[in-house]
Amino acid sequence: EEDLLASGNGKLRSVVELGAGTALVAIVALQMFWKDLDCVFVTDHDPGTLEKAKNNHETTMEELYDQATTEEDQSVVLNEISAVPFYFEELKWGVEAEIKRLQHKIHGRLETPQVDMIVGSDLIYCFENVDPLLLTVSKLLDRGQGVFLLSQSFAYDEETEQQIDLMSAKLGLERIVHADTLGSKGGSKIQRFRFS
Image (cartoon, rainbow, N blue to C red; front, side, top):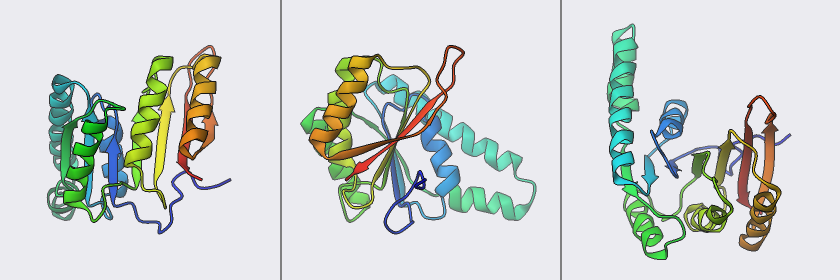
């Protein structure tokens, strides 16, 4: 089986979380990949939600520092993990002007307006979200090595599943389901999208 995070050079320099909520997924990505990361962008359409995400990020960094048991660990948290720039940006999926605005901000941090990884959890609540979400992903994701990881805690209806496949094909995205433990008692499904 292919590596879930497979990318061209093995280095993950940039992450965007879509529909961030509390920014939990972006914070986990930061803790996993901080050594290589140049920046993390946390996005949501709601300014109030972004404020909560920002507070959660700050609280998490404080807790990591407080939990560090040695001066060396505290130094890593303070000077390396917390030093990775974290940006909080409003973004409505599928809105070209908003996507371009975010691309411009990403380009200000990197040499490219595209990112290595996009992450999201429970982003698709209705059929109508599929096209704007995947269009946004296709504009922000690096065509060479970019990966979009999508997790879900509930099953989509058949129409939504078909639309995900149709829109993915239209945009040149390959969809691979890496884990599917959804059932009547919960579980999750993790999928990876990348340009084919």
